[in-house]
Image 1 (cartoon, rainbow, N blue to C red):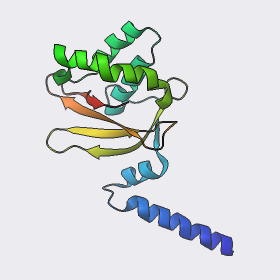
Image 2 (tube, rainbow, N blue to C red):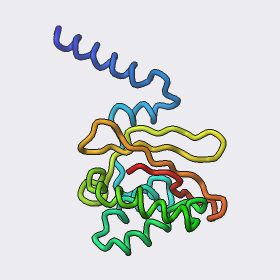
Image 3 (cartoon, rainbow, N blue to C red):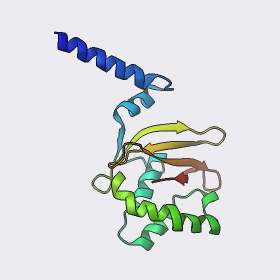
Image 4 (cartoon, rainbow, N blue to C red):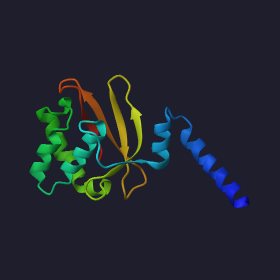
Length: 155
């Protein structure tokens, strides 16, 4: 009986801590338990992150790079921006993709933040080797049929 009461108090404390400052129940649930993403709806923000991770995990580097470019926001597709992605973030993503993917296709989201101004979200993806999740920013791209596309990503 006493153990049950202690457990209930601990769970209540955890729930209140997670809910403090949260905008929605979904966000609280995500912070408490995470959300496993395996088969996201096509062209959703989660689908874009999944495509980026799968492209980075492709054994054929060039094929993966071409696939990754398709999920980049139009503002990130200038020659200078593509060069910066290829030489910086893309190389890191290729080395670390397996730290985010389970079975080569699923990943866990542990938080998100709605961006102010433009329509976009910072999603925080769980990393299996580090405690802190990694952000990936996905925005609607007005120059690409208002599809979700990656603007910034530290995976």
